[in-house]
Every structure is written in structure tokens, then in C-alpha cells.
Image (cartoon, rainbow, N blue to C red; front, side, top):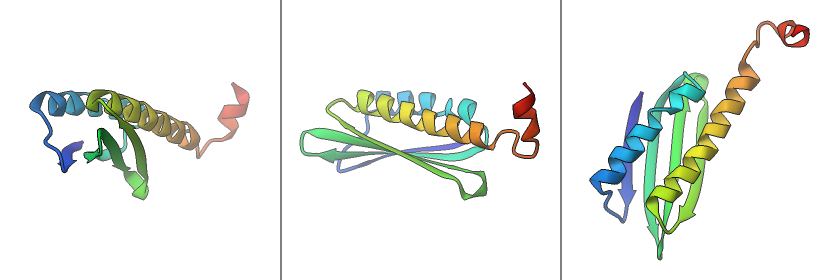
Length: 105
């Protein structure tokens, strides 16, 4: 899985970059077909906006955004939202070929 961390109108400290790459690498746990994750931090007035874009098989794209004063908090909140989206997508498409298996158990 390819992880890209970038900043618009702001520098990304090495500590934040390492934190983001470590946490973003765990997105595969929620949906194993994720290929690329792009994390963008943008400076807006006194706050930072964090946007995570995850691309998976079959042109599935997942986007989550959050604005916060602290970059780490903005990323954590955005990551939780993306994890929820990935989990819901995986559950929705699981057993797609065998829907009767859901009713039996």
C-alpha cells in the first residue's frame, strides 16, 4: 500500500509524518483492498484541515475531512471516520455472492 503525506501552505514535521504513515498503514485491517492512501494537511487561518483519500479496488474512493487546531487530533478524528467508512464498505460487500449465508447464521 502506498502512503503519501503532503501539506498545502504548511510544512509537515517528521514526527507527524511518521505518526501518519504508521497509523495509515493499519487501514488495510479494515479493508484489505486499499491500494493508496493520500493524507493532505492544509493551513486554514489558525486551524489545520486534514483530508484522507483512500483508493481501493473497483474504483472505490473513500474521503474523510476534519479541521482542528492540532494536526495530530485532526488526523486521528479523520482516520476514525475513514476506518468507519472502510468497515461499512467491507461489511456491505462481504458474502456478496452468497447472501443466503447471512440469513442462516
